[in-house]
Length: 211
Length: 277
Image (cartoon, rainbow over all chains, first blue to last red; front, side, top):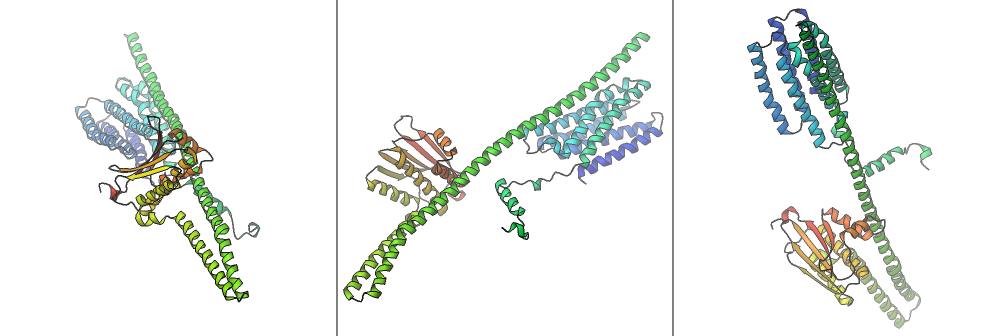
């Protein structure tokens, strides 16, 4: 299994465990807030890492590396200052915004550097697509989450569930896809390939073909 | 107060609904744009690759055809010239077995010797046409000088050449390819241009080796060259192209701004060990 797939699988398991843990505590206690903040940071780190692996340009990779400590400090500050008593809304919004930018880096590379195969044949595309759809879809939900009442929160959580399902579907497509094997791409003269293919079609052991 | 609360709730709901829909639409739009753009680029690339492949195949065909023609020419030379000469020599020698007259025998041996000498000369000529000995032993400059002297000697055209900077010889294969290209160009000029003179100059730059041919006859421009080398005919031009491709070289056909003569320039990158020599 590829490292990207392994990391994504880990995130999926972690998400399930986290959801169980949070649902165990009905009120927003200190422990739940720690779990939520930790989840935001781990999710951000994993998505950043996956995008980092998918990028080719060093300058863009450097931006991701620089953004990681800045976001960590910001999230810690948010948690310590206790600005939110329900969910780390601002951290998640900033996380979504940064991840949207990172996914745009990937698509920018795809546009600028011409590829010899379609972008959707790469498993990385599906992972990045999952991140983009999830980040854009839940952006306004988490941005407004501080202003939502409990009932509204429950109602509008549908957006989060819907985007999460889409994200999981895209991740599953990525995991189930075969690894791109660049070594198999034939760069030889196709004319020669044709000639060798034709010779292989001939079976000397078959008496009917010995005419 | 309740009304205000309801309005505020509606505002949040609208922001959430339209914001989320808008963001998702933007994301999907971006993905669709990238996919369609990439399809367009890949299609264009494939088209270019196909054109390049067709061109390569045409050059390969021309090269194979040229080889076959060369073989046929050698076969014809051997069969039509060397074959009958040797057969005649054999007849003379056979005659000696039947005729025991000393004088006739001597005459026959003399005749056979003459014919064998002619055959040796003929085979030497064939061999020289395959690989000029001057080129192998003394280099490109001497071989080109030789070629131009022969043209001059025929009296049909005034031919001259000057090598400005050729102190260090290139390797044998490169020299042979350059010589063949020059030979082909000179042949074309002799056959088609009806010019009164032909002049060759050689020069070196930091990284390139140049040969330029001038003539005052009917010549070609780069556009003509491109057009003719893509035709099914024009074996010689394709051959020039494929030979130069081997050396990663280029060729330019142009008419002088004075409109009085045509120029053909061959540019070949110098090998690493020649750069700065």
